[in-house]
Image (cartoon, rainbow, N blue to C red; front, top):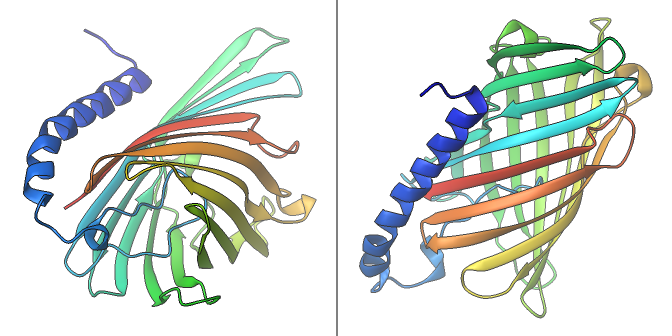
Length: 278
């Protein structure tokens, strides 16, 4: 059977989901004597705003997914398939190491006038970083975390960025009445434009979440992964909605859809993911 790259990735994620479901029964039974929420998985997906929590000392967490992005502009239709993956390892109760990538990438561009198609394949850059959980929530004081990352020009030529691109973000989270929550993530990043000149861009995300029960949660957010001038690629802004379901306290299935809010941003994107805490 000869499967395309997107089909192989979906098949792989489905196999992972099946395996996680099989493990779920054993995990549930072994968790029955545990204290509760202190060890429950807290992921940085599928929303753009990161969690203020870390994974915990000597704990490992993988958050993997498949994603599809669609855009139509100036007579071209673009579709990009990716496999975003985040690895997290706790070195202390308040600090974790992180490695993140868009993984395997397939970009298809259709020229609607000429009737031609170009398909490019490769791998995304690797991003290395740390997250520090600085404060627990207390009264009006939010739960607070700081993330420092650097994206490395390590991917395939078609998808490679321009040099090392550092970023710094802060996450503040508040628990609200009626099992709702609010998260805000401002930040800055340093990148290069097409002319090779360095520029500084802003980052901002605001998310409102709702926990429906012990397993289900949903969210709506406005995300701006880049706030920049037109000569530096312009601002990227999306409106996102999504949901997550806990198969067990250590295993999460999630999905989200995003709508681009300006010309610089892809029209639509969609993701489905699976996260495991070990």
